[in-house]
Length: 289
Image 1 (cartoon, rainbow, N blue to C red):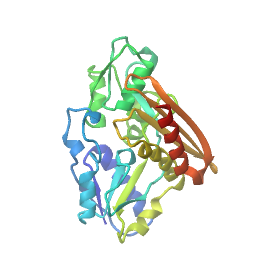
Image 2: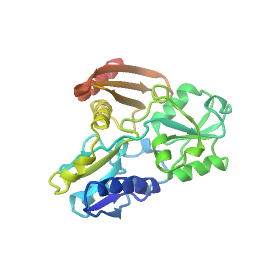
Image 3: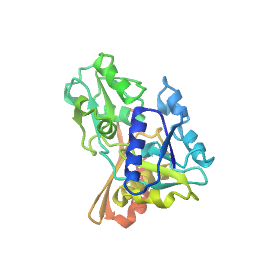
Image 4: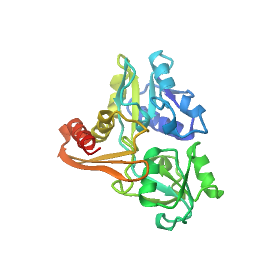
């Protein structure tokens, strides 16, 4: 088999993790093919100012469809709500933490007035504006290590990053604070990986063995909210679900870019209703908007 991945260290670590998991269930060897995406090539713009649909995935999708690679490993939150025809999410492995983390020499309540916080996410910008009214928000791009170094060298007073990536990269020592999901709500699918392959791939039986049903149900609910609202990075929307036994809990929140809360939704239901709960949450948000 051949796995396609972006070339960042985080993407490589995630792909290597999947390959290790595969090695424990099959004798089939897996090679890695690095593919540069549009999102990797653009370094100086905020994501919500771009045509973001598939910005980190479309070249990988093309490689899978054309048989250059057999499957691709994605950060699930980067996946468009609709895949290219002929492809499917074959497997969603167990999720890492969905939470957001602060990288800063300061605690969240200690950020200096007029300080500079870095993000290129409209959702994170909205949450920063919700809690910290007197800070300057500045775009920050680059890989995780590059962003952290911009805090260490004093260019930013702090940045917000996904805890999952920091843990996967072994960079937890830089974390000043981790936020509860209902305080600083993550993007739909944050912390989860997706294995995408052709619908007719001969390897799908093997790849499906890596699927983790609770994680798949959680991200199904979260992504359905996003899909029903028709949004991507352009929406200041947070969505987080978690499974407890046979129950699914879903929380979603929509803010304005300035940090005003438009809608908050708490839902609980049977795990079999993951999609219906996502649809219901989106309906409530639309009614509130």
